[in-house]
Image (cartoon, rainbow, N blue to C red; front, side):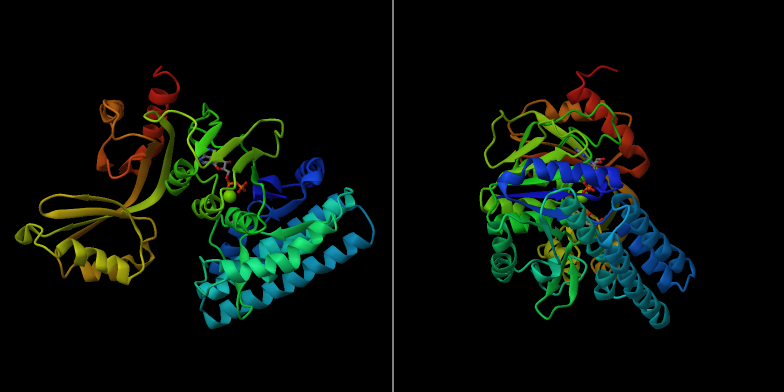
Length: 453
Ligand code: ADP
Ligand code: ASP
Ligand code: MG
């Protein structure tokens, strides 16, 4: 058994969906389970529409129609005629009506809770899995569409719900395993699940990878394949540096670190269930299927000490708390972290001095409340519009000269904060957003392009 997950980038057009069918057909003898994202860009539109509905902006209706139109158009291209197309047209219309009801609810109540947003943002996957299953079938791959909300059972933390593995395991046994035994290809939407009470939830943006890994680890699959629009994990985001190079193998630890620091090709949580069961994950290009891709393994096969990739993440906020009088009196650091904990906001990087602490947060939603709490402890400053740039690898602590090379290359860039040595696998620092791409390019040139100017 294998799990094949196709991201939105692989589902943009009828042509691409035919490519997906081809990839699945080639692997039919390995009993594939297919997990699909929403069509590229649809989740963004759904969320934007919800925000517009909240603001009572009539543009929400335009977005809704645009979303439906994209799906109808795709059906037209995929199934030029016949009963299947008719059925799917009606299905898209039904989801469209549901979306209309939800947008209206948000509009009139002027309230958009994480729970309602999940019901809305998950509609992209509810549309795509039915379409892809029918397309596979039409392509001669016998497939069955399965609503992932019947399979992935989650807790109630809407917006980033956690799969409940025991309950999900029995659902996988009941719904997916019998299909595989009958040589059918189960096709399910990623990203979505439902609580024990049956309320729709989502695993957080980019969460289809996680769905694939949850299903893959429970089957268990012999391999989890993440099909996307690049050749694999690359030494840097190719959108920032066109000269990015393929990384043939990385360890789970490196991949998690890369994902965490912004190499968005993989959702960070993907790695965990797969590592726990020792299942290899492979990142592959659906547009270039003969490329070997990147294999993510449990054990390192390359020597440590050299950087493996550069990652960056924008939209970071730096919070500086200083308390000169306390000279970091004992308990100060604990109280600072308590404030973040109380407001359930994770902290990424930390740097301390005698009288101050700087830290970064990714999610500024509860920042005002945190700031109010922190102002009781000392003077607080907040810097928005920052970026974290990370050099990721292994065995960094024993590596002489690495920090020197990094900071030599970046001598022209204003570095706001540095985190070095906290982990053996990355060196990270904070720069202003507008310096992020330049820093990334300079580092990539130094470590991956032989330092040429
Ligand atoms: P999908 O729709 O398949 O889930 P994503 O947009 O989530 O696709 O992830 C693929 C994208 O991740 C690529 O198009 C690429 O621009 C971006 N990316 C960022 N960092 C990296 C990296 N280090 N290696 C490969 N891709 C990366
Ligand atoms: N469609 C969802 C998103 O855009 C999940 C995914 O693509 O992984 O975030
Ligand atoms: Mg993705």
